[in-house]
Length: 317
Ligand SMILES: Nc1ncnc2c1ncn2[C@@H]1O[C@H](COP(=O)(O)OP(=O)(O)O)[C@@H](O)[C@H]1O
Ligand SMILES: NC(=O)OP(=O)(O)O
Image 1 (cartoon, rainbow, N blue to C red):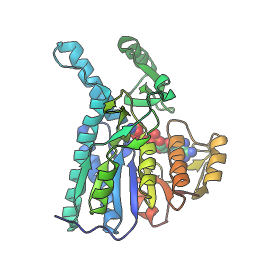
Image 2 (cartoon, rainbow, N blue to C red):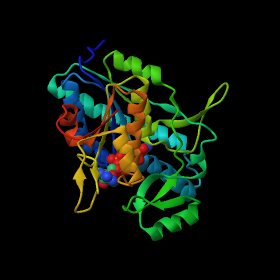
Image 3 (cartoon, rainbow, N blue to C red):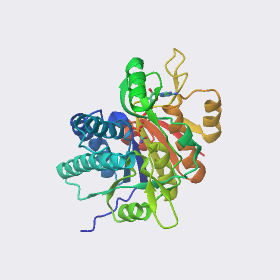
Image 4 (cartoon, rainbow, N blue to C red):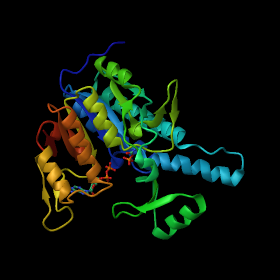
């Protein structure tokens, strides 16, 4: 059945960890709230493509199979690309269900479409030699070092929040299912895609092949938004605005910054690597590729107000 496309802007949303929680049960409850904010945008006529993170989830899946495999000798290991696809599947399912239910409650005649997405990366990407992407649960330093020794993992401290396993996070180059995502959006669907940045794949002459890595979802969302000239890239995280002097008594919220200003703040070290820095960089990339577009960083709760220009941090050319 054809659905009316919204009359408003086209927006790519990247959902951060606080929209999803840490377990499938917690996530099921949290996505109901997430869906309310997404449907607020849909109700305003905005055409939405929803992308989401998967760091905790992809690590959990890979870990769980590894643990079972070691303990029962029967369960297979689950390679990272397959674990990534599984995370897209169950997160996408829960998001889609929650969005559909919320639209049903409000009498909105639109539907969702989920696209399991692959993202092309280069085999010689230097990121393969320098793992940086945190996956799975937080650990103490002692536990992390024990697990690293036992499983051959690389572990690192994650932005002052504890220790985590880290894996390679190559640069996204192309979304294989891009045409499907665009056609579905143009046909009026609320598209859930590019989860976890897409499953990283290497393109050969005659095939695609999954690789053990996890792409940064904000970077893929930025590429997706620029690829179809989306009016806005919206990165939703735990803070209402990006700040300078974050976490200090001199903290000040930024309402709007140009690419040049954002670069200046980056040079001053204002945005923490592994948390706010990649988000600001993703916004810069999008606006550079599509200068008519605007990027917004805000919290889930402030998303609809941010799109109306009432809050959040805007990054523009
Ligand atoms: N300059 C800054 N301004 C605002 N938040 C910052 C800044 N530097 C670091 N942060 C932190 O970055 C976090 C967002 O990164 P992260 O938690 O990794 O994102 P995600 O929501 O995608 O999981 C914010 O919640 C905040 O704690
Ligand atoms: N793939 C990804 O960027 O996941 P997180 O946002 O959970 O780190």
